[in-house]
Length: 182
Image (cartoon, rainbow, N blue to C red; front, top):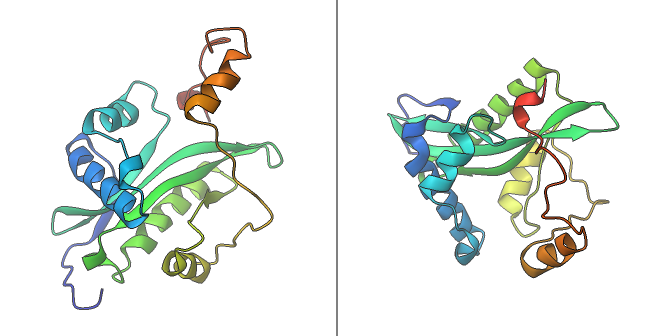
């Protein structure tokens, strides 16, 4: 928001010391998205995901005066049509007191730079249809809504039921890792 003084804003990769702050931001995002009961992220889970030997999730933080006030969590995708990877932004969040200062743009610009530096085809994400402030922000950056696509999800008992149809324990072979992506 205008009026917030930011003397030292910067965006950088998440480090282990940022985990507690990032978990707090993700829980704030869950509150904003009207689903706090659905967020089960803990510092241990995020640490394991980000800092395991071959992580499949990555992130950036926005810092102001040494305080983490925003984050972007993302993972690699692969476009069979383009034949190269892309980035899927799972969460983007900047604390309300720091919005309007360019931190959301800076976080997205860091991900766009990851894409271009690595030869990736796209940066994509989802947004709730009622979140008009975010939709307007994304459109102002040049992002295009993919209205012709519908997202699907399996979780809980539906995921377990489909898994049972495989006739195996769910592991047909070695798990793919992000570390093998070039």
